[in-house]
Image (tube, rainbow, N blue to C red; front, side, top):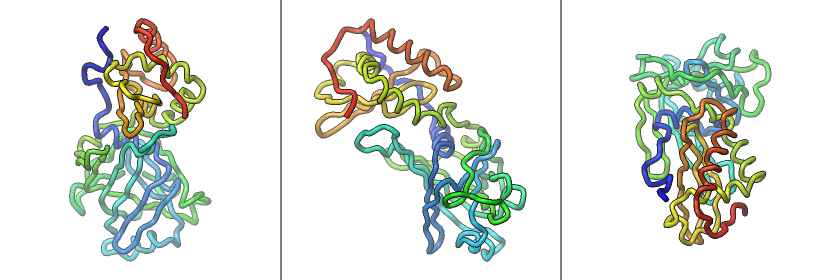
Length: 280
C-alpha cells in the first residue's frame, strides 16, 4: 500500500508560519542597544496584523523610545515556538522581527494596539493582515491603560528559523499571509490527542511508511495546522518528523475531529504493525 508520506505533503508557507507564531506566542524577548528583556503577555496584534507592545509607562523601553531621535528606537523582537507536547528538542521555530519601536499613540495604548511594516526608516508600508487583537497585558498583567503605553513595531526585516538556519520572509508576503486557523487552539488539541487518546495516536502511526519506523521507540504528535498533523518519531538517539496531511485543509478548530476520524479510517485499512509507545 502506498504511504501518505511518499509525496511532499502540503503545509503552511514561511509567512504563514511567522503569522501563526506571533498569534500563538505568549512571550518574547526584546533587544535594543545595550538593553535586553523578556516580556510575557505584552504584545498584541490587530486586524491588520500590526504588533504593539503594551508596557508600563515608566519602564525602560518606554523611556528609551521617548528619548530616541525622532521617537524611533531600533529593536529586535524574538519569538520562540515550542511544541506543547513532551518531546526532545521542543523548539520548533524561532521568529525574529527587526525594526523600529515608536509610540503607538493614545488609541493603540488603550486598545492593546497593533506588526506595522516599514521598508526603510521613515517609510511605512502596509500592516501584516489577518487576526483580531489578542495577547494584551504588560510585562505580567497590563492593568489600566492610563498607566501604560503602546509601543508599535515598524518592521524592517523578518526571519524564520525552523532548524536549518534563519531564512528571510518578505514583508509583502507577511502583509498577505494570515495565521493558521488552529494557531490559538493547537496546544490544547495536541495535548488532548496525546494524553486522552493514545490508542488513536498508535493507529495514526500505521499511516507512516514502514521504513521510517525502523528503530522508533515512541510516537508523539508534535505539530498541527490546517493541512495536517505532524508526528515525532523518536529513536534512542535521534528523531524524525512525519506529516500526515488531511484530505481537505480544515477551516476552523471545529473540523478537527472529522479530519482525525478520516485519518483513522485510512489507518484501519493499513496492515497492523508492531506496537509503538505513544506516551512517555
